[in-house]
Image (cartoon, rainbow, N blue to C red; front, top):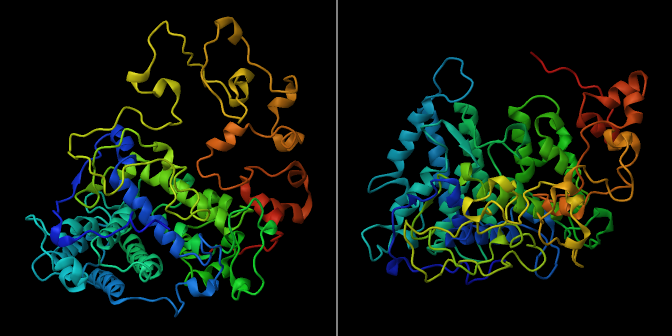
Length: 552
């Protein structure tokens, strides 16, 4: 878990609050955000809740009954402070009945959502608002040393949690705003460490997700910042993090069969497997008990067709052999890359006195975006590599403070680098974009890393592509790996494996193998299914049941 120092509450009576303001205006502001105190506070809070939501203790390795970590478990302690936030969400959901959707066909964005949003603003504003009724008294009572109150600083994060009334959309950036709302209350001492983590990660987040899913279906809100079919989910990310934590019963391994799970722990037989996301009966049973399957169930509600076709990323993740612990580890890394590291997602996030924009530490190891939180089960989610700018940093802040140019190592193409780092004409730096296996052997050290990714090279040496190591190029190279059997003989370069953003495990193939493609008869047709991963999935699961067409 994150250390107590990382998430130590501040004294509201001695704190100077500020109205949160936008700081991320262009793509170049994102590297500054990665090194800001706000980023560290957000990641520490996520890791703290993630470790608390898992039946496997990340520090001691003790495995507790997984059934005590489900949404329906009666053992979860919901304190009056956490219950107040849940009741606040229920009050806001009740306002949907006062703003029915406008009639008429439309693909996205029912304008009645703006009416609901106006009702929410009225209910949360004013001297006797819902915030005054349901926020913890320890947050609202101290006024602070400035003119701005804690309520005024927390309100923009809550209002930004339900989508945009201008664009009529909802996405992971709005979900991040709700997480910041909870984290802000935590930092003001509204929640108690060691008591409220499980209630926040499961009960409170589940109530919030129920509200936003109702908003999406009622007002047909457009996905905000979605990658479409190649994104993890159109709207949410946190339920996949905390939901996989609920199901983690052993540390991440290369194969779930190689892990040792104590036989005397109760409830293990009821833990679903990652591959069960394609089984509708299991999804319906688990969606009320687990956040991960709740998100999968909502996808089944709003999308039609084969699961592998409309959700290929989640389908690929369902084939991970390392168990839920490895999926949880990969989800955290993916959240950093696809949410906190993406300008379209974080551009609307606001910064105040709690989530401080700050000035980045020049000695910060900014590779922590992927390495710093990828081992929550090894040494606790508070384990980080590099110093980073802490939440209690004493450096001065200001809207004009900017990050040093290109502080993180990115995967951008050479010609997309910052102009200040581009070499001058006539320098020895080569901008050739060669494949990883084409790196000269002299640039590989004993640890397998490369030095000088783009070394100088004469033009004569680049007149023809170099062959793959160990064999001469031939017509076989133009054939797919599954058609030649060469895939296992020539594994990918270590650089390719290390560059995988989520590193969740073996990827599913996008085409059926040759035997499946040539299989004749009714059995072959059923096993192949449609063109793509679906045929492979059916072949792997042996599910030959013919699904009836959906009713019109």
